[in-house]
Image 1 (cartoon, rainbow over the protein chains, first blue to last red):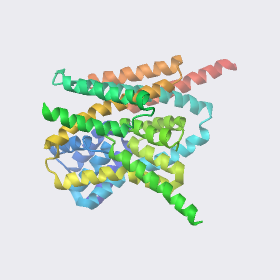
Image 2 (cartoon, rainbow over the protein chains, first blue to last red):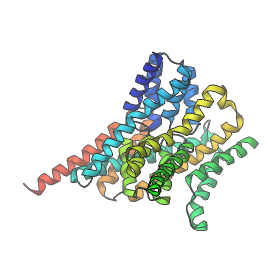
Image 3 (cartoon, rainbow over the protein chains, first blue to last red):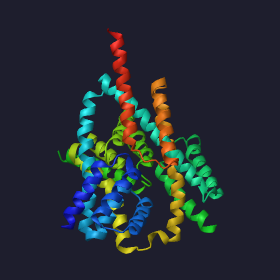
Length: 185
Length: 195
């Protein structure tokens, strides 16, 4: 009955994990450890892999845990379960919201939420940029130089080429730069 | 009729390929994906408006589940109803599913491969820039009035404080407080307006 357990466990994660992948990790840890699917060490490794592979961290974790517990079918079931709540909730909510979007109360609440989300995103960005710039308590010169180069490329592209550099291109460039710069050092 | 069927299918195909690409390049949680989504769905293709995108980010952040899934589902359903929602979500999930499945089956020591670890250190830098840019653009579109600016500052300060002092408070608390404050202030203003 591992498939049913996987489904219920990750349905729970999909239903209660607010605020994107990083906030969800605590909940996933709780679910995975309580079902006894993985050891703490293995879970930490899987979280690290999920963060360094493409796709939402939550989806990656579900696929990985499902696959180690019950092969391809387990991966499918766990992934389906983690995606299902978001899928249904957003369809329902946006249909409602579009009908009431001009209601002054809804507008007031949305203004507050928008300001709050902007703060959350800016805070996350600052944490991330700072964490990148410091390694083991001292400034990481390579990382700072690369960050400045990438930012220069991202913001300098438009005035020169008259169109925006696509974020996908920026990520591709950053992967190549990272592999080259850290490979040599 | 044949042409209209082909046209309908070609939109579904485009939805799939666009979200497959976004899924393939989404690293480090959903926030970086906001920049990718805006670029692909608002600026290049005009599938949704900028206001819709902003509302979508707010709703996605305030509801459970991965932000990337919320966004893919919405854009898909906006363009082609339920089939569109299914196809876009599938496109978003498929790259990570395939990569993770392969890694979990065949690569025991994935993170010890030097080139991949180094490339990822580079990607983390780009992700930081993309998230900062998404935040900057949301800020530029925010009404510059005392109430939103105060809420923004409080939520920024609280999140940073929680992070650096290792306090665990869910972002839901902040979101509820922000929405509640705005509703309360509106109620008070209205009460004062017609006694």
